[in-house]
Length: 208
Image 1 (cartoon, rainbow, N blue to C red):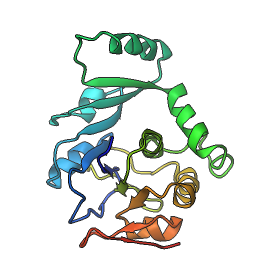
Image 2 (cartoon, rainbow, N blue to C red; image 1 turned 45 degrees about the vertical axis):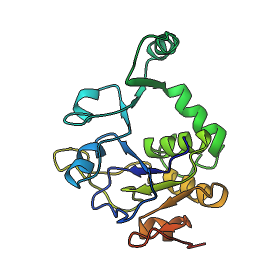
Image 3 (cartoon, rainbow, N blue to C red; image 1 turned 30 degrees about the vertical axis):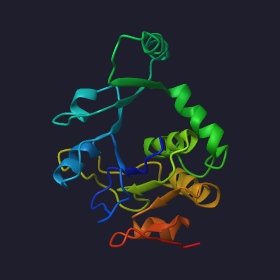
Image 4 (tube, helix red, strand yellow; image 1 turned 90 degrees about the vertical axis):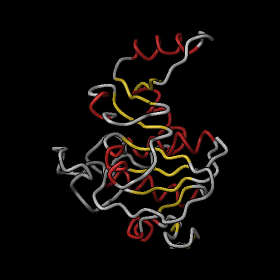
């Protein structure tokens, strides 16, 4: 957990840093793993997916660890029992909807309630909250947008980007209360006040 994390979301045309801190972990959100491979990024140290169509989301990737959202509380509880068996080596871990909602409640409270049409922020926000609560020392967000629709994977059918209002409220909260969270996306920094991790020099500027 002492390593910086580079998050790659699935927004089209991500702005990637040219220079990253030493020993940065590469963390991809759902289908962005394939986009990362096309962009020449390393294989994922961690990929956050949904257990529905899991194989499709990790196809062609050599994933060190997989964190998979599941709608089944039963599956998540069984997964906890497997994790206690000392001689079982596992790549995939499950996170239930209740656990994801606990991340939102613990770190964000009710700041996203009533600001949009969705009940909660996106999966990308959940993973950032997960990293903050784990104490990751530097979290650099790329490939997340509050304005662009579409998807970095041209084969993906998703055309409309949901959770924009909820994600905006969450990023503003991160900017105000979580100094380890920053972004390499200039537009996201300008819209939310997140510190901008400058792509060329690996430095940080502030839009606050």
